[in-house]
Amino acid sequence: MNKMAKGAIATAAGVVLLIGGGGTLAVWNVERESGAGQITAGDLNLTTEAGSWTVLGVDGPEEILNIADYKIVPGDVLTYTQLMDVTLDGDNLAANLTVTSPSGSNKDFVADTFEVSEVRLTKGTAEIQNPLTDDVTDVVATASFEFKESTGGRLSRNATYNFDTVAFKLEQIAPAPTDASAAPTS
Amino acid sequence: MRTATAIRTGMVLAVAVVLGLMVAPAAHAVWSVFVPSNVGTIQAANFSVKLIGSPLVTEQEMVLADGSPATVELIGYGAELGKLYPGGSVTAGVQVTNKTNAGSDFNLGITLSEPFTSKSVLAKHLTVDYATAGSLETCSVAAYGAREQLPSIEIGKEEAAVICFKIGLKANTGSDMLGETASVEGTLLATQIGRTP
Image (tube, rainbow over all chains, first blue to last red; front, top):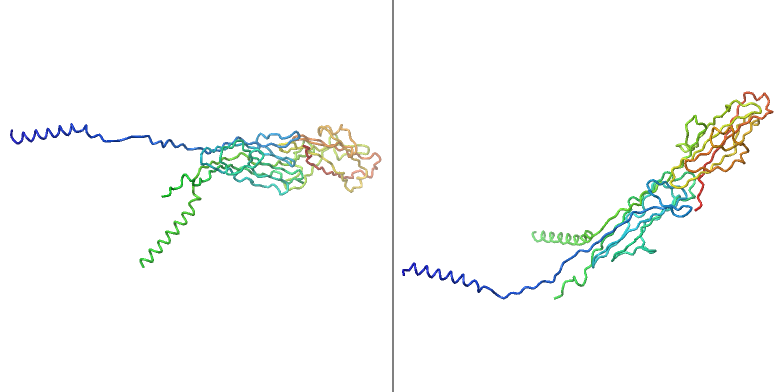
């Protein structure tokens, strides 16, 4: 055989060895599931029912269908009630429930002709205690307005008292670092 | 010089970092939900009382826009107020209407002051009697009596009451009073009647 034929045979033999050697590339390995699991976010929510005003009548409280259409007169005592539910779903979740602009604003009611209580939040008979850390149902927002019967002359006629800016805010408190989240010591 | 600049730059950066650290907690975003309420606006009613002395004239507010009381001139029925004769009488009335826009009950009590007769020589020959009636037109047939005998007048929302007057000239009035004039004035007072819960 000439030199070229010998070289071709040697090359072919090397290629065959390489192809044949593929079966010997396996090495030790092992696979395990991590167990890290799935991360699920919680929830923070505030749902409110429609509030309503009542006026104290001869036979007790009478509901006012639409406060925008109702004109009060001296002697009227109005009470506002609104129910709301707080959802706090989270293992490290706390929040404050507060009232924005609870006092409303007076326009033209003469001093001493009215008495108003700011909007407050209660659960049962007690004030809401912040921070909240769990769901709370049937939180009650209340307010009252009395047009005093002692109002003389025609004082405060056509006056208005505006609660339009009143709102309810449920805000998470920034979570404090826990022991579990602290950096490990070396 | 280069060292001093470097130190100044370092101090500025340090201050900026400290300020950043101090401000950062305020900007810490957390969950929150904001729900507007429907508490709404409370509105006081007006105090509107309308007076009219005759269906032929326009009703007017008892209190004028400037706060002064309105004056209603009464117009006689059956006979003109200006044509009295001894032993005769004429009648007139004023209708008071409660026009409040109050949301709840709002009743008015109406009282009439002791009438004031002008200091005319005719005044002592005049008599004034009072009555209530269902309308101005029926003042001529109302049952008249002294002012003190007027029943209490209470007017509900959108309701009206009529107070009638009968002006008489005494039968023994002499002819020397012929052509004399006098005016009779009274004051109406409207007051909200309080409710008893």
